[in-house]
Length: 306
Image (cartoon, rainbow, N blue to C red):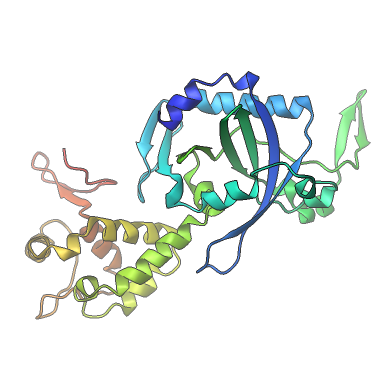
């Protein structure tokens, strides 16, 4: 069964729920991230709120699309990706059981959390719903404001620490599948951007890619640490058009009439400039298409054949 089929078959209100808070990812960007998790006792009201959020999230998803480097989801869709393509396994290993040494016993254990995880279980069926936390979980936020409550038509000081619980989850882990509702937070929690950076480093070492260019320095500076460009470069590698001699020849022959502004040297290599780097990525993604009807050129978010 797919993840969404499993979720649709659950009676959420009959499940057990335990709330975990996490700090991380930590550690060098080139190494596997480390996470520290603690579980916390929660009242029935908090547990019911988490159940209501999960129910709303399940009802929200009407379409499941394959996770893609450039794919985006909308208000009624989710992106699906396998667990082993991410660092999600490190999180699950950290919250395997609710042992006493991992229980939150003081408020400091909650402050400065990065995200929380609601662990739902129905016997042998366990799912994990994650959400990146907001400013209310930061000690700097707590020190910078004074909480007040309105009671009996009067404002009163309330010194009790407050933490916000969202009405949505960023992603849900079901067995070996992840359903992603918020791609930005998903990538942040699971350090998915680093995968793109590593992809680019490996791509630059490929002779088939580097030989396409007269020099890669300007192009590498253009991509830099930019998350969007790193995603696009990973998609360039995935598509592999730069390996296709026929594709590259047609690019040289027709790029101008398609509205691109690429420069080539006498050896047929692309000569990157600051002004043309964006067009280079568009071309290697095969995202510049021409309409035979209007005779206009268009940039498209996907080049899936139809």
